[in-house]
Length: 69
Image 1 (spheres, rainbow, N blue to C red):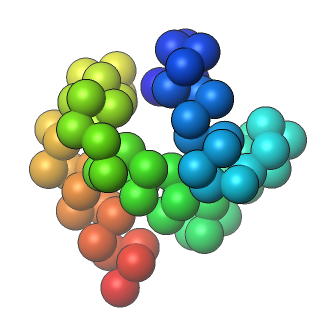
Image 2: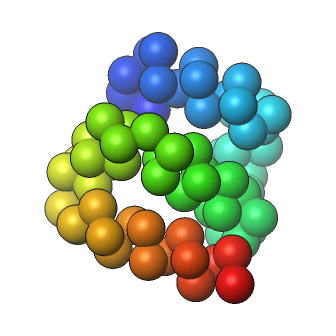
């Protein structure tokens, strides 16, 4: 997901996260929710992330719903 420079920059700008916060927060539900919200807001990003992770877009969307519940 972060291999694409434009996508990575958008993620940081839209979530307000710094690269350090993102790395440190990989186990933080709030950080995961922010990343999943970002992905689900833009279908091309969602599809690219799902493909890179070997999951379906629906699985990512479902994870977002569970975290944000």
